[in-house]
Image (spheres, rainbow, N blue to C red):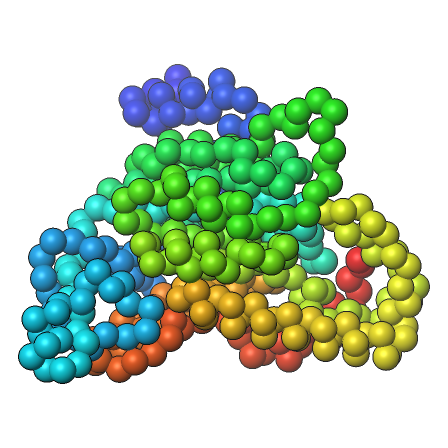
Length: 356
């Protein structure tokens, strides 16, 4: 009956889904929804130009240009540099096949959202869409999971492979993380440096690496991120929620630290408190962007109220702009893809009914 409805191949797929675990069926249903609602839109907007998401380092020399800050020094052409008395680097054609790695921060602070969805859902949707978009063009996809058991440790590695089944396997790992050891505490402070250092040792061949995190972590992650960026094309995908930047007036409310479990009673009706909160949040934003810029990575900011397809297209356009800057030989730092100005201007008005 299934073969009659879906054909031989479709019948086998439908039968597999019918006998799968609840988590597998949930992953398959979510991926199908994303394929219809997000990937179809991206296909129309990209018009086949998916390669902007990934930059290769093939063996065919395509061009020479002046050295820019954060360029790989291994690509410097010393003969041309000596002749022109200005550092120049070789630009190679893109590899036909590359691997994309997703470094996923699943620590407790990511499981937060003041609106319809949490940062963890944004992480899952983004990872599924990008993995499917990249993987179906012959590229391999792998992942390193951190904090998925509620502990600040790297607890799963998915070797890079291709195909839709690999995307489903990755989604299932996010949806159903490994069981926490008996007696282990759920709370712990995030050490993002552990995830990045694990990736340095895991991802050996040059790849495009997406670091998906809210970057709420103990200090010390900047150095391993820079080391990773010197060997790979690294994109920092920063997850955030508007409530983390600006508190609405909700009166007296309890606030709980998701990672340490500490609770604090705050009066959001106090205008002075809200202003101090916003000022500290703005300072952290500036410091975070400066750290990402120093590491030499492109940055995509994804808010819980962002449209995923629009955010990805915004990122791709800025990647194209950076590539044009590189071809023109102009010095420039990695281009960050920030939230639209309209979103930041409306943070204080769109979440008056949000709860902490």
